[in-house]
Amino acid sequence: MPVRNILRYGAEPLSTVSVPITDFSRDWQSLVDDMVATMYAAPGVGLAAPQIGINERLIVIDISAGDREGELIVMANPEILEAEGRQLAEEGCLSVPGYSGVTRRPARVRVRGQRLDGSSFEMEATGLLARAFGHEVDHLDGRLFMERLGALKRDLIRRKLRRRIRRGDW
Ligand code: NI
Image (tube, rainbow, N blue to C red; front, side, top):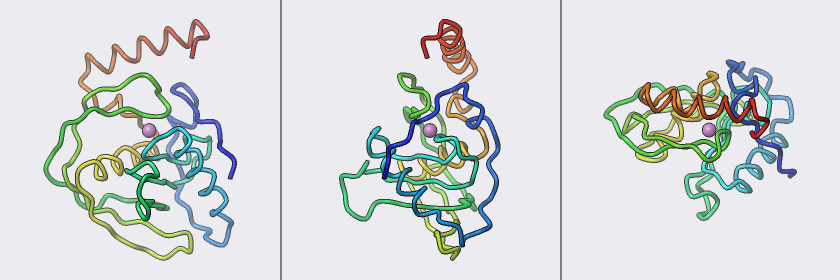
């Protein structure tokens, strides 16, 4: 289970809309193993395939960051069916290390997705897990958390990142 390189802000796959997974006869498990190893090594609580350069709709989430057994969620083609309430909390991203901001997300979501065998399942999430689903589904739509920040904070982070990219310091 090799740990992959996590792409950073500015890399094209991060701003690309990923395609649905339709062929479940392919070996997705080894990709998932790499994604999980990469997420735990970071360490992080979620990772989307585009973050390692693969624009397919596949995410892994573990809000315990590997501390608790049975917390790992692997989902292909995740879809947020319902969202209600709201929560404000500090949010960051493994693709934008060193930067964070307070984003608004739904307090509760109902999500539908598929296992690696193609079967469908649904789950309900609140709190950090609801936030993680929103964050990872955004990645599949080519969106980063900065787009959920207020304009001032968003532009500040973008300016800093662009400056660092120009300097070759990113
Ligand atoms: Ni992220």
